[in-house]
Image 1 (cartoon, one colour):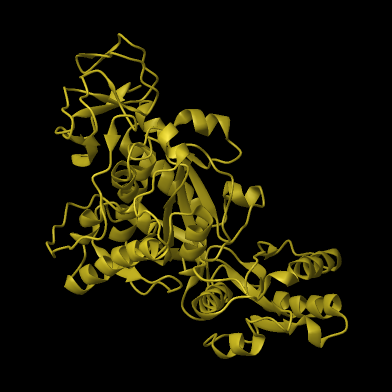
Image 2 (cartoon, rainbow, N blue to C red):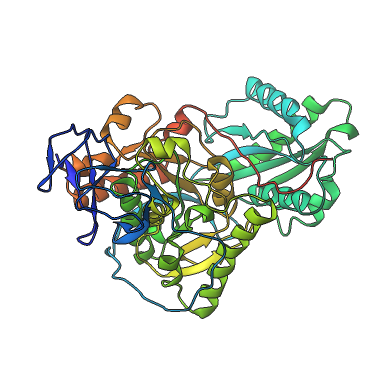
Length: 492
């Protein structure tokens, strides 16, 4: 096992990979105090005001003199970030790791040319107050019919669709419409109440092209027996989707979201770099990955901007960053009020520290597209998308954009899942062992002695198995399926 790591040769800190006690030695430096696992230790004397270097980049500055061997963390470091800044187009394309592969996945072809990794029957609620009815319809349907030949029947509760106005109402409608058209759904019943702001007629008119054999509508206030009518419509949808079969397709059909949450000091050392290697592998094979969490790009955004495929994409990335900063400022909030208490306890000191680890999930590939919130994937390759850092909102946004699965790295652990398979990748072996019922893959093995190449191959195999339906993600096993839609305005 590796006991500590210096990520970049120019770093002036090391990260310890196990708890260290005062008097132990790291890279020839005797520790002056205890250092918790995944936290940083100074490798040289660092003067007050001098930058702390990690990942080969500044992650903040010393707020007091720091002696070599001392703990480097929030008590003696502060961010260098401040307000909205100007950016210059300076393209720089690093080497992309990966190789061409003949691996295949078994997926469901859809009429619009997309592919699903599941064949599920969904009830999409236009408003939150029909949640109980939606579940009762599902329960009644399942009591009457054997549905073992599809991948499940689900509804996704949310509190939106009424008492909303303006942009929030539009966002809710667009997100739910994106879900209706998602390729993991073989059939969808759109369930409305009748008096909500998110009216069924407007929803249908603005939905775009859809197959009426695969999408049905029911307004509860218009029928006397809502359970019976809902069950009848589910049966029609089920009959049209139950014979859908998986077909063998190349990796290029995969669209995978990249997310982290409950991060720790190991995130940027194990799990996030593993996702980066997978992202490079998938994009080399003409597949698609999507990276969100814009506030967790702050401080590392220039690395992504330099990889924009052209100046137009660079400008879109600048807008992505600055629009989110303006969102913070418009609400009179501090742009750089991050990392979270859990992040700090896990060894992340500043937002730069968090962001430089976070963006590693995007590997080294060119940025091929920038997707607005509620938008859908248009370009194969690595894409950026406008999402907050919030786990539920970010995963919902990634899936609504067309991602069939989300890869979610975590160092502290989290059980939730989105409305698509949400695979949890542990940053450390302790978490993977302790929360085996939450965690799908242990990236911590790379500091336990496993090679990066063998770990990546295991990871690719697992993702292909989950995509092909050979295995379920842990959130699916636990039946954890949640959504949350971005909200910016008032509630009536």
